[in-house]
Length: 96
Image (cartoon, rainbow, N blue to C red; front, side):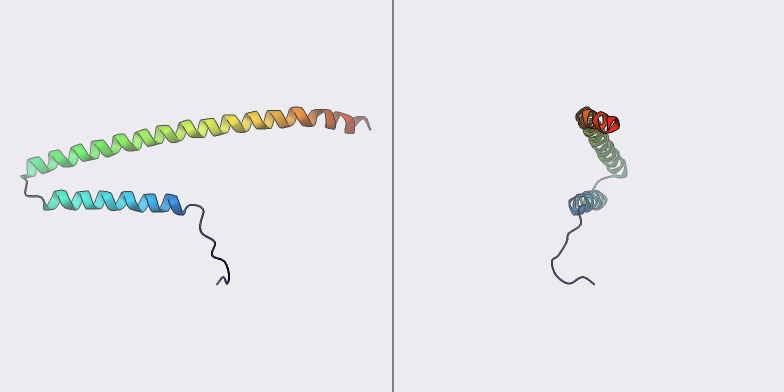
């Protein structure tokens, strides 16, 4: 048990978004199942909703990959810059 200042989890925003999306999905499914539609219309609506959700997740995945690639590239640039700055110092230390 911790006493003192509350330390929140770093992933609390991600968790909240995940639960929000799950709740929206469950609410949409319950709404569709309770709607007065025929089975064929209901299946068509469910399929359309599934395809839309799949497309959205695919877009988010692509965006996440792009952002990760950008971060990795920036990290490599920073590492190269640090190596170039540290090289004269390491050469000086080797000569000593």
